[in-house]
Image 1 (cartoon, rainbow, N blue to C red):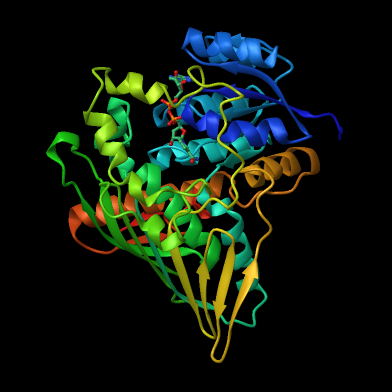
Image 2: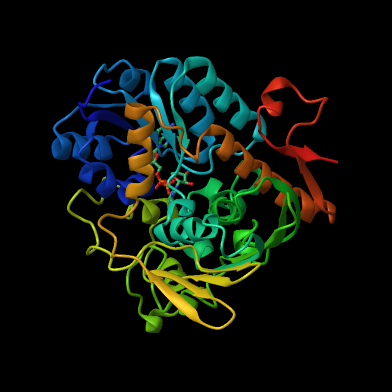
Length: 406
Ligand SMILES: NC(=O)c1ccc[n+]([C@@H]2O[C@H](COP(=O)([O-])OP(=O)(O)OC[C@H]3O[C@@H](n4cnc5c(N)ncnc54)[C@H](O)[C@@H]3O)[C@@H](O)[C@H]2O)c1
């Protein structure tokens, strides 16, 4: 055991890194120890700002003894291979959501963590948001009764933010399911705190110019009888932040008058290819000092209402309303110190103090299994059951990873 800061290497210096950067830099027990990215301009900026080495290849980064753990924030397609390589090189891993885009890859990743005895965590995701954790804690006290139903809605402009081609290609894990339903599923799993049972879903592919899953509606059921209805549209029309008092996903005040901004930015006033526009929001074009003002509110993933036996709970960006039979009480949260600090704290606790994180490899694999089931349910127009420990499944599955069952 050491009290030295954990040396973290970054794999993929893109948009996700920009979002997690403040929490990494702001944590006293983390030291940014290196990075890997194919883009020379991002590497040059990183070396200059962090005064540490960067590499063009993962092998280079994993050969650097200052790197004890890696935060993998590369595109989805690389998560599995890079996670397994890092674990086998003796490094702990925090991998972005989705953990991977096939259940087989997720299982291989979780197995590699078991085999090597290293920490594997999946995140950040909105399952870590402070209002979600507060609501889960209130439910776990027991006096509100068990969860019966969760209603969760998020209407965003996801599809019209600048995208890499593969982010709009369903065959490569594009569309809103692996990128956004992973958040929704993590949120409802934290609240219900029971095993996933089945999914019945419909997905929508409504813009031929950007043909992929851009919307879904799903009923996710859990052992014990609870169900969660999750609905999402990324088509940039209605904005459900209206239901969150005009606080954005990242906890910032939002101007309702900026209606349609994502679509118009994409189509007007620029001849730049979309991938170039996307990089304008990534590390490289932006740097450590290009952070928005500190968020006054907590991050959220849209409207969430939890119906328990004795009360309803509504999550807001600054706390949780509990609606009982004769009174309603607001449980206020203090403003956030730092966005996305919870997964970084969990990583430090897991590596330095041996605490098993909730969002470990098996957790991430179950969330991906639920995404697979969502897509399959829509395709086959039927309910898909997820099995936790079928007798005919191999040992890995019996250890707790859910897979689809006919
Ligand atoms: N948790 C969140 O809220 C959140 C937000 C955004 C993105 N993400 C996730 O982060 C991942 C990256 O998405 P993004 O939006 O940051 O993409 P991005 O395009 O902004 O960044 C990807 C970065 O990875 C680099 N890269 C490309 N190939 C690579 C490779 N083989 N190895 C290492 N780096 C490579 C690119 O040069 C780029 O710097 C995705 O899996 C996405 O789902 C999560």
